[in-house]
Image (cartoon, helix red, strand yellow):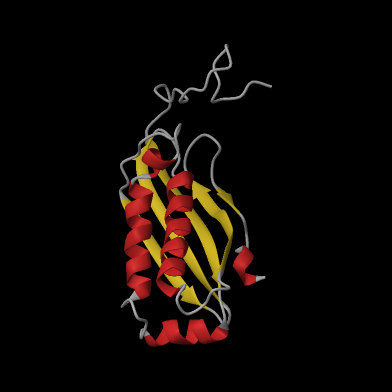
Length: 161
């Protein structure tokens, strides 16, 4: 089996996508930040010591998605057409959903994953004074469209189970 990020000598390389068609791409990824119900309730009021934590997490997620190729060494730089971070509060966790779209030669799954993960990391940073037991987990792609592998969907988000 030949690995796509290694050349014939075994050296790491960026995959050549120059022959691929430019198409509309979309990816949706989620992350979950588990926390105490008291912390969720505090977040719901918006009365945290550091201001609007959810808005800050959204902005951080979008900024990170735009810089994915700077964080992941062999990831292609993609100019995003759109990036959005949605946040849902649950009894004992927060779910971030990042939707990234681009017109490109390669997919935007990594951008969506980085956006969702960074939003969770940012919220963790903003609430760690209140809840030392928070846990980030369940980071995954929910769906993707475009490209040669076609549309794929993982029917139910893992945070719903």
